[in-house]
Image (cartoon, rainbow, N blue to C red; front, top):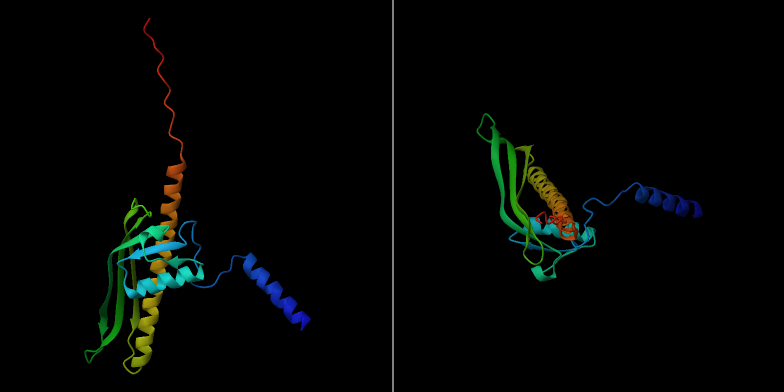
Length: 182
């Protein structure tokens, strides 16, 4: 019993020491623990909420409560047929996801404008395993949304760091001209 507990503890320390974290967890920059999301689809909102929950953050109900505001300008998930069988049924599909968003600070100051995330995946449509095909499509969609969330967090981190650097920079001192007239 003592050996199992010690072994488990050692494995835990090795995993945390190497930077291991749960899938879905993202490292949130300071100030991004509270995020306000505007105009997002239900699936994107769910993925962001899940990622924030794993990272000890949360979606808030108003921009005033947030450390950062993400405004979704355009979000589109499309499916198109890539190939047909001899009988005219779809053999292969492609999912296309397009997201355009802007990032603001809580006061409404624009930090990053019109950021685009695009993702595409294709999958085989097995005509005999309809249920499996539906599950595969949903798994692919979820992964595409997760990828979009990671991209949003990375860009938000960069925007917040740039905003912080700009707000803490000292203005350049301009040397005064010496009075050369006598």
